Length: 428
Ligand code: NAP
Ligand code: HSE
Image (cartoon, rainbow, N blue to C red; front, side, top):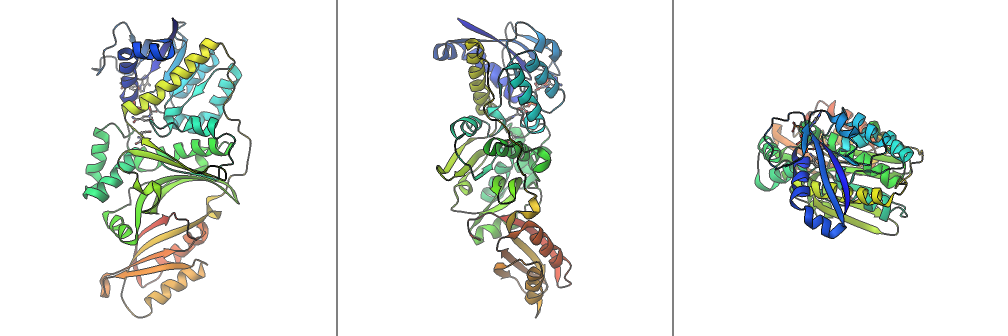
């Protein structure tokens, strides 16, 4: 039997499910792959914690470094999260010539370039299929199957927690806080859910997708992000009336100004394939001249789907260990121009609270015009002091849109810019 010893860093939502699967499904995995995958030891913070899995004969330790160094551990799985100490431990394993499987997008987005280089030096695999899209196979398709495609845009719902919250708010009228609590109870959210709702988790995933899609390393500091904390039930309702759904998207595209990656809420036409993605489901939409459009969709968070992706990587890495092959990196990263977000064309939905008086619309139109932003549509609800204007612009550079918003905000006739959300549609 081809035995591979596994050391697991972390045994929470993902690690706990993985251990359960490796123990319970040992015979089935062996029958299908010819591999005898043996968990040797598990590193956790608190060994006294009650675990929802049986781990007979598996050592539980707080000494993660010794676990990595253990000669019985052939392969390290990092599912502890965060950068510290995960980064140091992953590097230690790679430098010792042990392949690493990780689900940690924060670590890959922040330190992936150095870690991939370390893996290359040691000739071992660093695999991170679970880092983006949970159970959806997307890293392998992007870096292998689509390696020959000239990808133009990768756009995705890459955070399950926020899509779950937005779906609950729009479909069931659930309050934001209640929907967030449900997402936490279901194991979708990060240990600190601020990473989800602020867009930081999606930004890490967008950085990884952009790097693999365009073959140039896109660091996290090149991915501006805005989360969903300012999205209200009012805008979800207005957007629906205008024919849009509100989604938090990670967008990576090859623009005339260079590669751009960003995360923010968008109004998406309800007939766009991503608009139909509900709950914690993730979906990644890839465009390229030869493949036209591809949609990858599935469970983006939660123990079981994520553990399936980790398990696939473990099996892949185990096969490489047994083959004794010097592993080459899947994608090589060449330096390339990264676009300044200010120069990227965007279009906006803006909700204004205004006094319903003669000349107000003219002043607002002039403010947009002075910033060279063209208005596509205007819709008014209410009268007198309670009037609401909904404006959708045409596409213009992000800096021009920001200037227009600033000019509008400074108008005496505008009581409040109540919302400003980008629109993503194929129209100009
Ligand atoms: P989690 O439930 O919080 O589990 C983290 C585990 O790591 C716990 O067992 C914890 O020990 C252990 N740990 C944390 N810091 C440690 C340290 N310094 N030393 C030793 N052990 C430590 O997290 P999770 O949801 O499983 O997520 C794990 C990773 O998978 C993260 O990178 C996350 O972003 C990624 N991921 C998660 C999902 C998901 O749906 N949850 C999906 C895709 C990717 P204790 O148990 O003793 O506290
Ligand atoms: N917290 C993440 C999410 C887990 O909600 O998508 C998957 O990476």
